[in-house]
Length: 329
Ligand SMILES: [Fe+2]
Ligand SMILES: [Fe+2]
Image: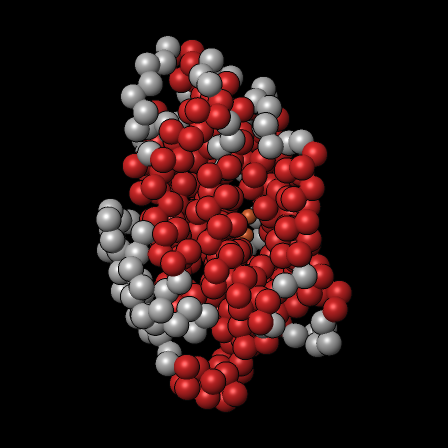
């Protein structure tokens, strides 16, 4: 299967009745067993980036212009501007990644703190994942330090920060919503990093950072997919409405702001106007569709989104019809 294709969205989906029976019966036991295997894998593959992912970025353009969010804008930039833009883009995405991982860790820590089954393999896995995320984040900080970004995020002010804090604090306390958000927060960078790793012109150190990150994120994605059905069973109506109707807007905002408008100002472009052109571009729309369709597929497979009744917000985010089939791309 190529990266532009996707599996039918209802593949392996359980009907509502099958789903309930499976959860009441063997699914929880099977999930416990599978989480146990993930724990063993995390234990076998501990990577310490300070000693295992050493090196530094070169001084030039860190990835090819065709991978830039501005790829479709026909910008005429000097070599110096291309170098600056590539470095600022990566710095912006990396800082967003550090913040996202902190939200995930806070949510997991909240679940550990309030668990009534503290010895459960899920708790052990969450602790593994927190450990892996803290190591990623230290490496990402090292990367940002080397990139020395100068861009100022225009959303870094009172009202936007107030909203960001409020929304993230609400998400952290809602395991099912957090789990669905984590799927998006890991699928989107995974696609970006895959494209960077596969391109011959990507900086070698950036490639090794992405290779290392994707390897551990694959387990995190597997865990989120494993536990989503049982979290959905326990989810409140607020969670259910949030995931089905509000989460696509949160994911869209997260996707669009990974490269914020201040990045474009560092190469002399108008920040907001360029950002708007980027968010409307075919390149970004295709990336968004490709990155979010696996998230929707996981929600359908988990019984979160009923087959044949994909809500409008998800259809717009992923570019699919109500059956989850791609449209318009
Ligand atoms: Fe990570
Ligand atoms: Fe992760």
